Length: 386
Image 1 (tube, rainbow, N blue to C red):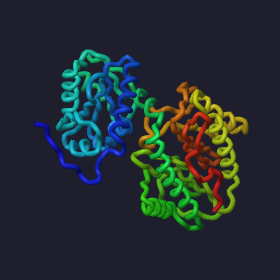
Image 2 (cartoon, rainbow, N blue to C red):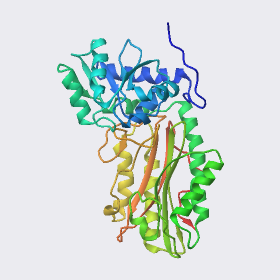
Image 3 (spheres, rainbow, N blue to C red):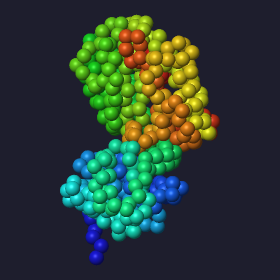
Image 4 (cartoon, one colour):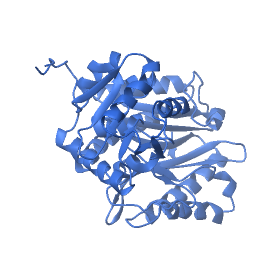
């Protein structure tokens, strides 16, 4: 007799089950195209994309979702997390393991039951949440298993968003705009990074939003810290400020970078003007059929034209959603050959380093459309003057 489970309040998947089935089918088509017999999905963002469950419980050991043509998706999870996975995912076939050391044997038993012990099986070797020891343990259980790196399989499918996903991201951006505007309006001499962060949290929560992460928030000399965490450090007259923050809806985060100055700070003002030009060049280059590397080149060319190539020390952007970012996602970097498609969402953070190592800049979160890039934010990326 089939077991029944009573619902747990405030749980469930944010999208219709048909949306997840569509995503799974698209991934299975990519599995076949990659000449794989099955795929083990372990990256948290990819698990959330395909199941609804955010993978949070998998800090302990991998929670592979096994996708195989002709079979229902099978989720191998830690027994302790079973109720959470069942409540917050759309997967019916769930196989538990008890302890960390049991993962490889239980997963191998499922693969053997599905006749995969000598087949080509893709693993997300270039993503977080799968340790080398996990791969070795699985290979030790199935010595004839042909392990193939399938890091890009899910990431390239999920890069193109459905209408439901874009609705979620537009809702998230409305809250990110609120967070940025709160940052801007809170700037006054003597206010600290920690106080501004608290004000942002309060205003976003009051509006019913959720902050995904404060990737960076710094004032004055502390803008020299990449991904600086808010501290009880005050801003003074003639100092810059920078924030990189994102709010989320249904797990879809929309990051945004905005900068400001109280009074005057010539070095960062000049740097920000260049960041604006580079960002606008990148946005102008975005359209379906363009290589990711060409977008990076457009931004980089603008910076090099001004004789400051050393100011730009990272990539131009990356694909987003669900969750803010992850390894294996489409990347706008030198030489990248991935081709942009309508429906992709990209975050373009142009952060430049000054001669004194101040980091300042701006970004936009865009949707690739047939006409070019649609900017999601309604907050101008120009330098805010408090």
